Length: 80
Image (cartoon, rainbow, N blue to C red; front, side, top):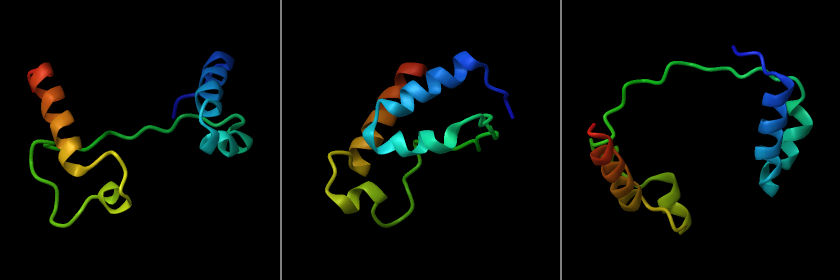
């Protein structure tokens, strides 16, 4: 866990407050500490599990195919 300075909290609250859907979170954000966990070593070039991605089900602009294009471009750029 990382303790947050007053500047850290202000920056986090400004970021959350910039999105209407997240403003309710601010009521609970008070003096939270940031909790981190090691991220698993995913191979993002591998296909997703069978079926559709969550965002494919909602007709959003983001699709699994588009996400994969973005990931491939980023990994190519980073040399990963």
